[in-house]
Image (cartoon, rainbow, N blue to C red):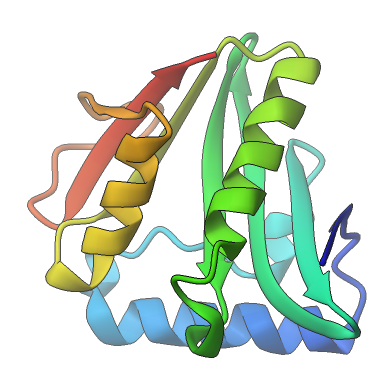
Length: 151
């Protein structure tokens, strides 16, 4: 498997992300959906990585610069057929390393509170993320869990 910065120009990653946004919309009320679409992920303050196995995208993740020293983890996803195979751990470890190299000292995230998101919350806790108050433009939301990690 290979992790690379992705310019989001390929059709496969576009389909992969479209599936991600559609899945999040099916699970989370629209007012609580914070998944970014393709155009939002192309903004200058975002670095996006894809993880590919051969020619197939099997996962992705991004960081969004919030302010000096602080970034947000965005768009973490593993293809459904490859969940619990180590892809998310490998990608998250890579993103944390890259965030440090970019000079970030804090990495925060928002994820869901529904049972569907429990594996993600456990993964983030395994990597040292702890619950925190809403950050950036987020507001308290019963459908959201906020987590942060000092790098």
